[in-house]
Amino acid sequence: MASAASGGGGSLKRMGPLRVQYYIVMGAVAAAVVLATLRYMPGPAVPATTARTSGGGVVRSAPAAAAVPVPVPAVEEETGEDEQAQRRRRRRKKKGDGVVLFNFGDSNSDTGGVAAVMGIRIAPPEGRAYFHHPTGRLSDGRVILDFICESLGTPHLSPFMKPLGSNFSNGVNFAIAGSTAMPGVTTFSLDVQVDQFVFFKERCLDSIERGESAPIVEKAFPDAIYTMDIGHNDINGVLHLPYHTMLENLPPVIAEIKKAIERLHENGARKFWIHGTGALGCMPQKLSMPRDDDSGLDEHGCIASINNVCKKFNSLLSEALDELRLTLKSSTIVFVDMFAIKYDLVANHTKYGIEKPLMTCCGHGGPPYNYDPKESCMTSDKYLCKLGEKFISWDGVHFTDAANGIVASKVLSGEYNIPRVKLASLVPVPKSDD
Image (cartoon, rainbow, N blue to C red; front, side, top):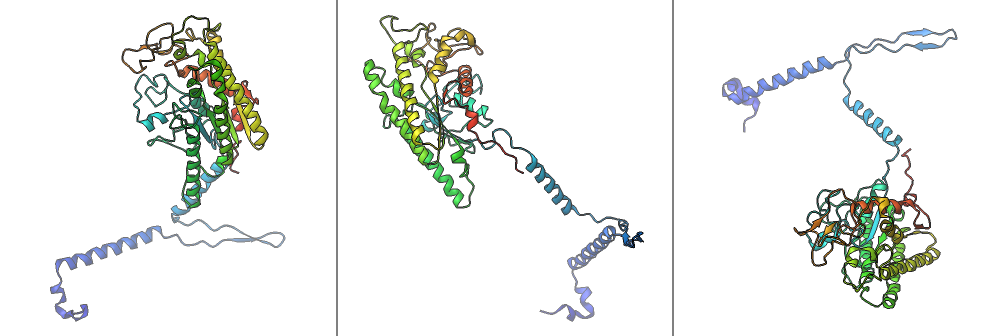
């Protein structure tokens, strides 16, 4: 191929129109560069003036500023970032920062796990009082765990089994409705939930070891609060038995709860918040069961024998936690007397603005209990209380948002706890970043 220099005098004639346009464009670019250089060129430097002090020293005055300053956007951006970083370091952490909870339990603290894992479509009016739509909770609003999270300034816990929309940065909820403490009775019994926690923790630590991000950092596990609210379904499962047989079935349930706490401790847990069972004898579900007469009811209309089983369960659980405090000396273990709290709602219902403490808000049959075991709250022919009316029972088994709020306030007060420790005291104190 011929070189450019070998074209001779006829080279201009051989140039195509594109080659001519190329040189025109290049000339324009060169002109623009020259003009830009002249525009942003600093003015001539002005020499600094000097003056001698009385001691013979020399003081130099600053040179005059350039006529046209050279823009330095990169330096300005870096300076801005430094100032923002300093403000962040000076700012104290907000309430809720660093709060991590792991919860184990049944429907009393299930925030949507059973709906997700079983594919159950929970329909309105579930969730109507707070979320205004069903969330998988078996209530018209929040469960006690939700109020606990709110009190600590952290979002509601996501269910471990929920595939969409979960956020595990502040902990995990392993509770599944219908679960028991006894293994082999239900799919997601307490031992399985603890297995799920161990799996979750190991995956987090594996990710961290590989240099990847994890929802929970390693140091958060011993600082986390481990809440447990389970045993109600175990009691329900023996209520058809003679009274003395019911009592004989309680120690194995307590042993499983104790075993779960010990295993969690082996895996780094140090702060335990354990709920006892409530007054199951006051539930419309139990009260609507056929009976010969009302001689078995107490002064507030609750079934005394069932409540006595619940109180015995709590007594055994409290004793088991006393034993664990002696062996797990590096831990904080708090027992919450849920029976005393929930029974008080019935016994002193007028104090809380509740008119019908033993009646279901969403059920069938009307007074006195509005509960039919063959019908669901989600059917079209339900008898539904007015929005805003205060009821304890939402569906005959689970509490309303209003009742759960009252219970949660007492749980958080520390007055019903052994030892008398407030939940907030278990949260690491936020520190400034200085």
